[in-house]
Image 1 (cartoon, rainbow, N blue to C red):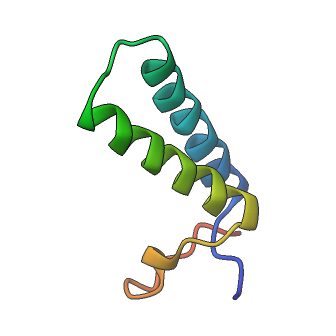
Image 2 (image 1 turned 90 degrees about the horizontal axis):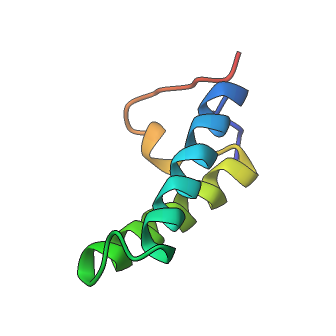
Length: 65
């Protein structure tokens, strides 16, 4: 598993994940949408932590410099 995410990409994903969690915890988003946002937020945090996005592979994308 070769890193394919740069630092800006990782920071953006972390910020978006925090926004998703905040929207869910404050009750602004509820129900199925809240569940989807929490799952996406968790995926964003996980991919940021390991600097690897599996969706980048088929498109041969790398934001790492």
